[in-house]
Length: 366
Image: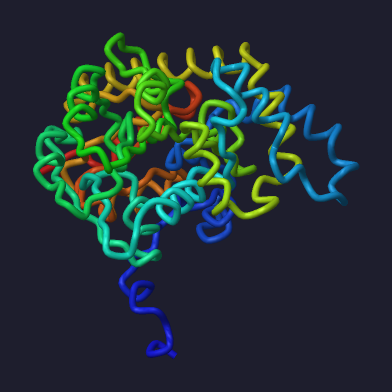
């Protein structure tokens, strides 16, 4: 069978998702489990989105609007753009695939960084496209190193800002310099899955960059701040002409009916968004303070998670904490073998995680 499979598929190191709560309970015989591994919203979903879903349930015998007219209109009104600037996706993962298929020829390459969202490389490999990666510098994208890797065949750059899994961000000045230095044929994707949690003043306005440069694409999602991860809803923002080409690749009916109505309602739920943001910022302050008190090293984050240096093999940390009913994300697949990524949860969840983590690594750090 292996001989019949495409060679590019055989090279893929599959993405390892966070471990589900129910599976953990079943495997370990636990009654209570908290999952702080996948950067989900600890408050649940937007109440307005849930209400909209309930009202729309009677219509699920029909295909959804293939163009997502009302959701695109809502996004356009929210962000001050035109509906033609948006492409909807079954999560950002699908849109990464759509962008690659639209722009990158078989003999061209894609540029990104080590220690970033794994799907950029995985989806590129599935499409049999070469990926070049610059090393991280102080847990951040090294834009100068990336520019040195650009060659005549480079067509597309992926930048997660803030970066997943490090939580670090690139400043507006650094980003502007990078874009100005790009060759005319190179496109750049800014993946802003965590933009709702930014609390610094020098974060770049990607939408302004997009208006000035037709080779800029922005990806955003409803999974994190709006709590709709289970519906798989993301969107790309691009120049209208480019968005039209992306639409040619997008599968029809890729965004289901419930996701579309939930997205429209979630955009109106500003109170839920504000509540989520307050919870995340407060939770980060708690972890920063307690990690510092306990002598646990961490990376300051502009997302809803924190990268933590455990000082020991993260796979062992993950297994030990799992037995105590706490799911975190071990980072060995990202080349960060002593690190775990911790999602900000509710105050009680944060306290339990801190207790279990400190006991797990106490006296074992190198």
